[in-house]
Image (cartoon, rainbow, N blue to C red):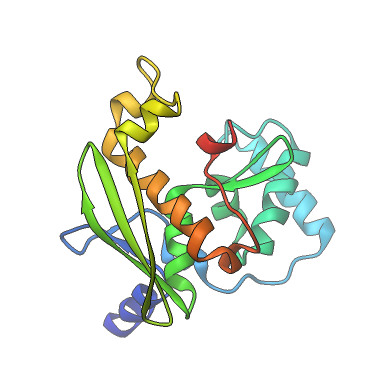
Length: 188
């Protein structure tokens, strides 16, 4: 079991400061088994009927999320929980974006500093610095992102991290995602 855990860590498992797993389950980043379109459509119906994915209200939406996730090598449940399609644009949760970057053999990132007011993340390409992405609460205020009772007010540390991460993903690792990638908050 120890060897399996070490391999999973190399494929993108997100760890907190104490070394405990958080965010995207690394098992979800394993290679995706082939499925027929008929199987995907049936699965989409089952997942919607399960009631466990409230933001997905019909089988067609579930199928779209599953298909979008398959393009990134994701399984159906990971797609349902971490993929968002808003106005025809595909977004991912910040934890999945981080996991996909760490899973890629050429890319990595390291949080340089991080608190409620700001986050700086250094990105690496082939073990060499590619650039730094910073995001601050002042950036969020200037962009009009902070709303009373909203996520920026309730979870500022999480939000500055997510925005620094996604900006860096777009700037320094776009080929990991086949172009620009966004979180659902960035898509509106």
